[in-house]
Image 1: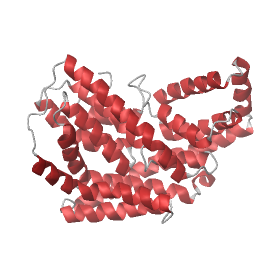
Image 2 (image 1 turned 45 degrees about the horizontal axis):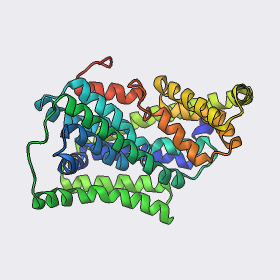
Image 3 (image 1 turned 120 degrees about the horizontal axis):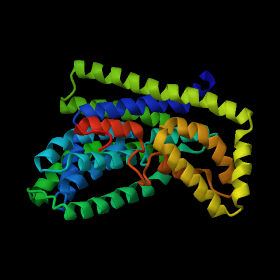
Length: 348
């Protein structure tokens, strides 16, 4: 367990968790929601679109699905309730869009995959996550629009003019700048992903202090919550690395490889089988241990088929987070979080 946690790259996880919690409390999430409302507020079911877009923007900064579900859901829920949105639909939209933050960088789970795959470039994984994350958000908005038209959900009541839009956009620029600072710095080689996570904490804390929305008591609560969340994630990492080591020593990857190749020798059939397995696993298991356990099993098979480790990493995250949207049981932590925020049962 301790060997599995002995990595400089893993330091990025507690830093990004802390940065996400600071953004949640420090007014950054609210400004991103305001920008989302200004952009999509005149579409049918505008609050659902706003929820999706805000989760995408917030996830691109914090890299945490749970933080996105709590921050954006907490802001949007009262507005959706006031407009007569079905609570179950509102919660489902929040659940489905929050994991986009695990695909769009900075992403904690892509960092975990880099560790599990033996050092795949984190910067390359970050860049590879943008397009599928954005396309997923667009697909979600399309489905939300169809549902809103069928159930006659209202268009946003307030039409803003050009001057008002510029005002909202100006207020959100400091928050959006964090995306360019982190990703631009990593691509340019100015700092590593781990160093970028520390910069994210410093920048978000400075921004929250400028907005004057964080007190010493709030900061203490943020630090405690970040310690608890980081401890859970890192404990999962340590235990999963131990289990992965045991499975490797027991030749489990070789046995599964042999079993799958017996079914078919066609590259696409094997990849389809792996996708189905990962989708099912993501329904019942949190993504961090799933990546650490199944990457050593499936990555050698994928490489044997000629699939790039970066491409396969995106496939794993997409399936394990439930972004394939075959079900609403995926991403368990987001499910419970969003259900609590919207006061609905997980069954609904």
